[in-house]
Image (tube, rainbow, N blue to C red):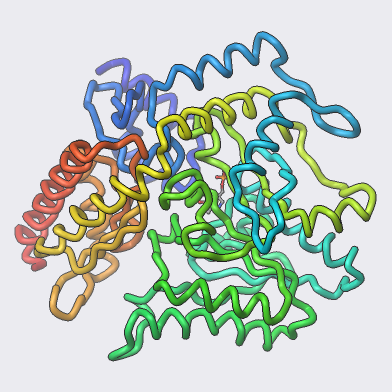
Length: 460
Ligand code: PMP
């Protein structure tokens, strides 16, 4: 329509998109999303699309939830903003901090007593970099500066967070990483396994890459290890069950801090309020963002274990913070969102009902000629598109089969993301079994269309 074309023209004239090739975009024009309800979004041409990515791993409670909008409205009228610098505070900020502290299970009998609020996951991970270095300074070990992260991780786009990350392209652009950040391989069984190696064996071997790196850097120089429980943006890389216990053993052995980046994995995504519950790890710091407000308003932060908080407090001022640390409207929405998720028992529903059901339905997709592997964990899932199911041989990268499949998904009416040849989903947690059936049906239709393309082009 003329309205869509007007918006697309303005978009291409004025809007710089994150992570977007603008030449490719100009050829097609951006898809304009205009409204949303439940698990569906609509574009400006009236197409209804099942949002298999929850916005961007955000909208766990689904779209159109009035209590969240009303919480923002009420708070804006009462106190739209005040800062938390120096010695002021606000009610929504302290209530949300207390609420998160209550929701996060203690580790080794110690609570996550404190929260440092930010507006995004990137800012929260920048906070982590400064916080762990500050911690070791105060502990009298200022030489502990190095943070170990993983290739193909995503921890954000600010300079420090992008340095922690390890996805292709991010370091090449901008002369990263900053000093003191080093990387180990990701625990991606399907790419990195050795002939005959079981997932359990691989999980232990992959965890030991951390130990090798610690020894290479020097154990007394390492401040922390940061990782996503399940790598999200890197393609929903679900580690074997043996991985996290071995990682925990290693960080314990060398006394280094563990940062669990749960920007994607927390708030029910893996069937628990926090993902470290799922894997039994004992982090010192937990990064959160996105679904803390179901994406309705920007909010992020770091949960700080009381062991760390006590040391920070002993050092006087931590010279760090953001104007919007503890923004009252964002925190009011966060509280309303957690209330709603608790009332609907969304983490439990994922753990006991929709997670297992998605696992079953997703696994059935492996009967499709293009699907070599299908894996889920709670309500995240990934499948690998393959050229040969027996050997799991992949298509040449330059054919961009994943992007073709993603296009067919959109046309069919479901959002799926392509990460190379992995097709991934992270749908809203309010999904019912019937919604999952519908999503699987749409994905299958898109896979059929992708296969038809490949056959037409003589590529399979
Ligand atoms: N950490 C993880 C694990 C993420 O997935 C993301 C965002 N996708 C971030 C950090 C950065 O969050 P934000 O985009 O809110 O800065």
